[in-house]
Length: 205
Image (tube, rainbow, N blue to C red; front, side):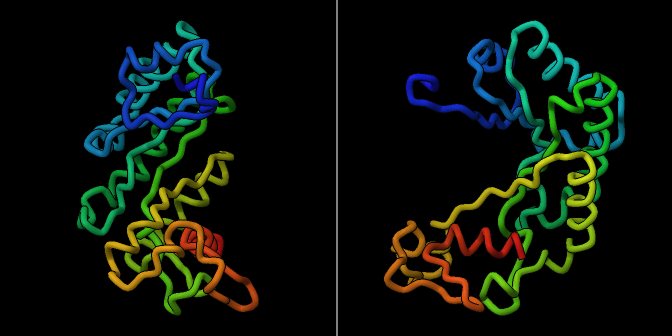
């Protein structure tokens, strides 16, 4: 079904064996996930990270010919609603997973990342040019971004433009759904026609 619909990339939130096996020989690029509740264990134990990579990455690449390209360490672990539950474990877990990939000689084929929610950043001006990481995680985010860059790994953010509609009843619907051409947001000469582009602009700034 995925191939028939031209899907070339799949993000999994875990690494369930049968799901991964079914993707074998499909050519589809796969991102396997590590749930947030495993971050503490992986942060404190390199052996646990090595076991995770051996079981859920190496085996599927070598035996089932699954095109695993990324390992997502956690999912939106810095959400404000988590009240800092994963602040001390996400980066150490990221380091251990990277080390495990290197030990398995997969560091060039499989890259680590940490999918984040858009609330890791904020803007002081309500415009993209005023964007910065949230004050309480700014130093940690800069450390993580540098680590990802040093390992040629992607910086990943989940962007949900429609959430703005839930947070603000007067938010323009067309702007949330890519149709805000009639009333674009101007920021220093740059025009943003929809919330997705403006959010991406926040991240780039």
